[in-house]
Image 1 (cartoon, rainbow, N blue to C red):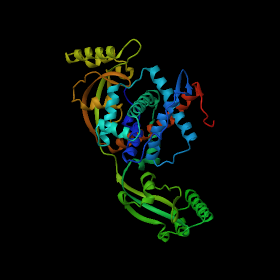
Image 2: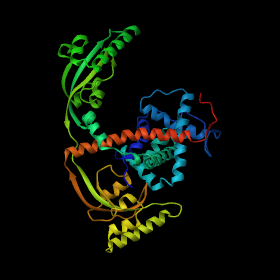
Image 3: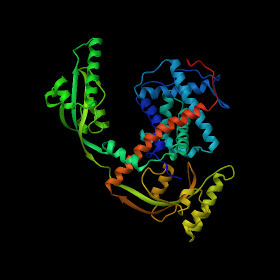
Image 4: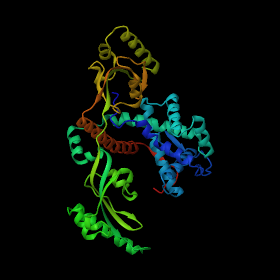
Length: 443
């Protein structure tokens, strides 16, 4: 298989944490290392491996700018050590699992990812190094943390994401209940309820207003029309109009309502939102927007050679080079795919992957495929699944709105299932491992 069964750009998305760290450092808001002295005492035993104090210190040094970038309050040293150590344990377990499965991230792929991070932040790789080092973050620590994010993304793709299936019934149900979330919103119509608090309110007054707002929310969610509740109970200026604030272009939505306007489906009501004037309920009464843009699809076929204890990378690459020469020389691609491809699903169809949409395949495969002209055959290349050659048969524009909406819904469901399945898989990995903590984490 080459399909990744998740939303496109898995690895770039996983590298968002690295980008957040860098963004905070670019603001010049301070050093990340907190002057922690590296030590080599063992802090945890993980199966047959260990985590030492210097690794924990380095991970904390990377976690601090991440927390600052998100505006999260820094917890106590004990809590921080506990959280970061648990993250390190999960990383180590995934690293061990990846080694057992032969999954790795070579230096060339890592350098490409690091260069991409630097480019997105408007600098060269050398400038990235200088920025990190100047802010007290080791470039090598940052580099290896990035490698680990790529490795775990590939591992989770193989062990979790590719096993996720989405049924037509699930897509139908999503489109009925949450289809509005797939529309690119241009305007929203909002309704509003305000439970006001006085200037300089006491804690008792704040709590009373909060409780009143929760009570109003229960009435609305229990079936009472929002407009009726607003007219009877809202302290807002538009109470007698049922709290109707009218239509807003997305760029002009009041800051208080931005998140509900972006995320709530038509008819949904927000949780209570506190501001200096009191507590607010926001309802998305209606949405105007655009359905997804038509997308390009590629009809492609491939031959996959997996590596293992017997077949090395060089062996796989050499075999594919020979097969490519035979195809260029006139042999039938489909016949060779049926005889040689390790992707059993597509091999039976002569390597045919059918019509492939953006995001349907892992980034390494999609990048090579997208650069090929119709009928061209790639040179051998590597993905998390092994080594491939791919041929593009033809391309088309998928214009059907209904089909586009179904594909968008399928992607959203896959991502939702993927997050839940990954959490369950990590818990199982942790539960089945031997872990001996050597520092006090308060457990």
